[in-house]
Image 1 (cartoon, rainbow, N blue to C red):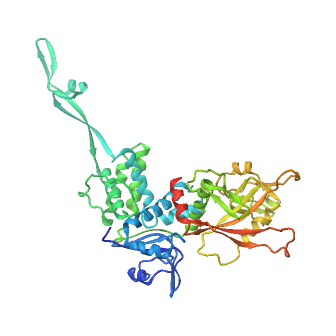
Image 2 (cartoon, rainbow, N blue to C red):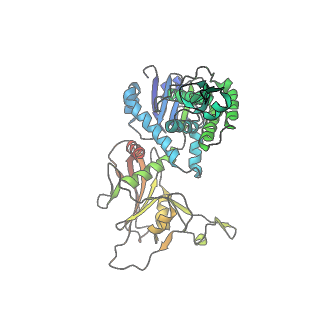
Image 3 (cartoon, one colour):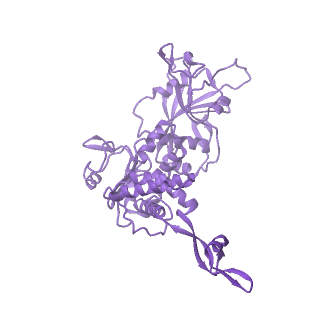
Length: 460
């Protein structure tokens, strides 16, 4: 990779003039890649852009100190693990998430918009499990050594009578032969060319089958697709049909962009929510009330039962049903990013993928007051699952027993940072002159290390 020039930027941060010049201003960028004023154009994506021997990698907000990240541009050996980590997170998120979720469906479309990665992985998975596609044929010939096909020998070989014995000579010998065919060469091209294009982050073992006798370019794609469609009609096993469908999809979407390849997403905020959810479940240990700091396990494996994307219904009109319109009027529910109860605490947490906080988060404050006198029962949460749901899960609090510990609400925003301090700040603290019933209400800002969350997500 010594012949490639690398540039690093952070999502949401200004793009250096040197980079804009290298990519000919906005000519090599899509409309949504760069936002802001002309004198301060900022990155608006996370991912990779390749232009010939030049590569631009845009990392998530607060992934690393800007100066440190820029210094890594000259050191591919130290940068390569960061490229691979970023790609693994993007790829795993899309593989882990249900396609029924509209937000993640949008991510998949962004992920595959410039290159058919989904089709590639189907083809590569087949290759890992079964090897290159082979067509097993039975060849038969006359001979004296090998496995004899007696039926063919009796039908086709001359009959010889020798001393009263009937012999058939020569005999028909059958042999099973595995032949590499057109489909195998298509597989070899797809895997080899993809690994070569994206070698800075993509890992894999390329097949050794030579495919140079077939011309693979955009002009020949229609010819290749027509042959694959014809071949598909001769197969009946689902695994073979799925392989050919993936090959057809790959060649339909592959484009010869003159060395211009992109893999990027504009909605990393959706991925940040999943990174935070995984971190809470794997590493959360509790809350220190005195220091107002969250406690985490560094190595993960805790398995806390944090619930993600929980819908609650404080509007009494839709208390017992899932309707969004009641008596002709719209009815709305709330969606809590994360909810958890343990040891006298209940946690109402919200992931925010911000470069910085620029205003009061009214939504997080409303979550507390609209659910203040309700308990979100854990058993009912368990039945809801991890996806967005409209099940009614509010439970009125029973009359308090003086001997029972009341629930203390920890209300916090979870934001990205580039250091390991996990600092906690007060985002909002209520002035009791405005509400004397709330003597200790506050919303915290908790900062989590982006690199650490990404590494843990790939691990678990």
